[in-house]
Image (cartoon, rainbow, N blue to C red; front, side):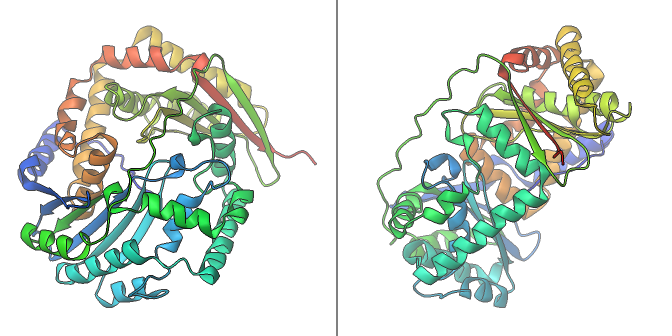
Length: 442
């Protein structure tokens, strides 16, 4: 339910070759779109490189759409969608998919829930039948609801016990966001998980799992005409719903550093998570901020790795900057090399940021960061799975799948001055939330 990674740089010549190759394979004109009468949008990309296909369903619903009392429902439906509908009963979705040579998965974030199907292209109609069945007639059986409630509650408890970053991340988000729904965890609060009512589930499903709240992406050895025929046959009869109420809560301006300290018995070394408020993904500064993250904390040659890990202060240093509908956080992760180092780690980390703001970045750093981003981008487009996920991501988070094809130029346009500017604008103490997780004192 997660994505990404990649490291090594290609030579300039190798990168250009990869870029040219990927561009030759796929252009914006290769992606065909249509929208059903019920408002469900489809993106279709024919790719006959292998006899397989992907079906990605991006639902515009995540923990951001919840409210106190029903937190965690988006993630809960990720479970329930595999537990039976009118035609295909409990556990049948997976069994039928596997019998047809396919596999599936799903992930839920603050902003979206995404269902992924991978299968031989010959099974396309079966996949449409499976997906349409659970959208039109999901069975919210009382016994199944209670069973999955227990599964989710256990997942939450186990996750907090086993993951220092999940423990610390929940606290940092809760401190960084006081009004916006990003303040609660995607999996939800324990008391809400135990307190959901059948009426809560039904109302949430009816609101957010309507076809006009979804974008479907089909990539692989398919024909656009066949996809359209099947979409009309299986999905168009499902009625649209009133558009969901827009999220209008805007997080108030943060006016000073916020800090949270957490203790955990199983921790061997302190963990630090430092987040800076950054704009939504469709903001013009997205690409400069993405490259800034790379220069500061991606890979063993990044500034923070050299300053913290190579110096012996930390055993790990990295960063996270992902897509969000609303302003969220650029996050820096550090594991201290021992007790008593957190204050020094903070001092060094802030010093590196201040140095970048004061002195800027070199042309070599900019080119290296750009090469890393472009290599990752084109690497994703080498597979039908990567194409489907990337098309959906740009359509939903950036407002138009065509912007995917503009991304290389957007990275090329980022200058050293842009990176210095966004660092000065967003990596301020007043926008910072600091979380420290340390061993619980006996």
